[in-house]
Length: 96
Image (cartoon, rainbow, N blue to C red; front, top):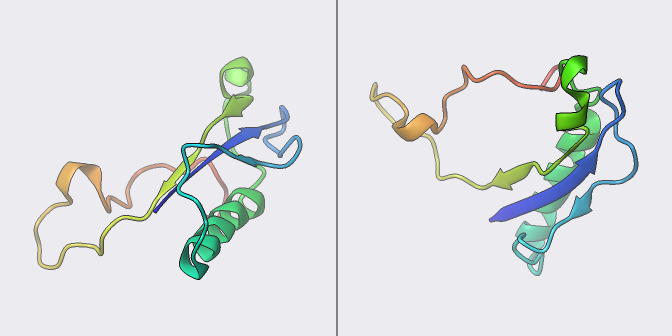
């Protein structure tokens, strides 16, 4: 499952219009795919305002977040493979 959006943000980190689902997304033909796409859209809308450095506004005012359904987290004490499931990564949204 993969959903790609094009979003535009204001300088305050809020959405400037509705996110647009891009053609690279898998079609939401099943109930699961539709729920996944709706969940991704909800994450984008509910996590605003995004915390981004204002001096780079021209670089982040338009971007394409991609949501990918990853397999379940590995069990045991092995480190995450290739950064997957690494919860230490910074988030640009507040409270997400």
